[in-house]
Image 1 (cartoon, rainbow, N blue to C red):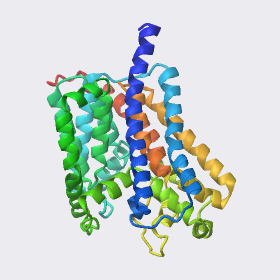
Image 2 (image 1 turned 180 degrees about the horizontal axis):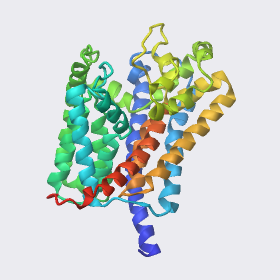
Image 3 (image 1 turned 30 degrees about the vertical axis):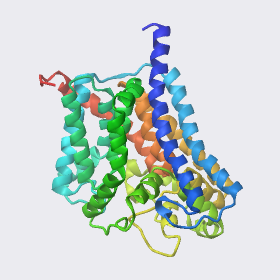
Image 4 (image 1 turned 135 degrees about the vertical axis):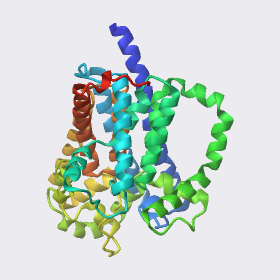
Length: 407
């Protein structure tokens, strides 16, 4: 491929990354608009009055947007100057790997509740359990995003893959799968995005009109799957979208709350392990046992004196770094450097894979930890990229890519 054609191709794929970026920035701006118009937070702190002065809140907005800009800069570096991939995948292998992995995890979710949120730790026969622990290093939704964005074949196969991916997400009692599917489709169809909007304007308008009702029903369904009380049942459908859905796609309320209650958290953070972020980062490799009991996300959810342990609130990158700063500025600097390192590692390993839109999908996946600020969510992407490298090499050794299957 000539240098000119390569540059044109790269410029075209950057449009896909920008659309994903604007999705999260849009959630941030809508959250800011909600907070300014109501004087209360949305998301996890829905209804809590905002007492920050305008300068402090403006700083919080800028600090919440800055991680996305940082991630985009690293994305630009790799999309322009990354070396050629070394792990050959191929269209057929990508397809078969996705269906094998997804069906495997669907079976585990049905049989043993593996990965199901709100359930007790799964129990399986010892030999099988060891194999499950190995395969758990593969995130089927990350692989699904690569499949949806890059598979070149029948639309029926893509549709079947999306159905299986959503089925797994619902079996695991989570709604995040819809974000993966949506953004992967955006990446796949980014060149025709404006044309799609023009051609299907009325369908899209109807979708957004029905979105509040659909979101309300999905949250109720998720609570039922997790065996929890539906705390959103009393909200209007509009509040469900503006206060809950948009609020959970943005960390501005959580980070601003940390700043608002800084006097309280300056005392609480003294309980943090100095290496809490790095220990969280190691969880995808060594299990949750390495994570300290007291982490910023638990301090945040228990701010009013509760004792929640199995659930938490994201602090956001600014909130996490603020808590680290309260401990010591050097801890905040170390944690920031660790975040940047994990972002770089994620792109580094993703670029080993000869997959379409590898940088765009990796950037899309990183947008969530760049929102939440959670250490293990940063590292899990890098670990998953390594797991995908191993998966594709093993399947190629088994000659899965050469099997005659009617895909």
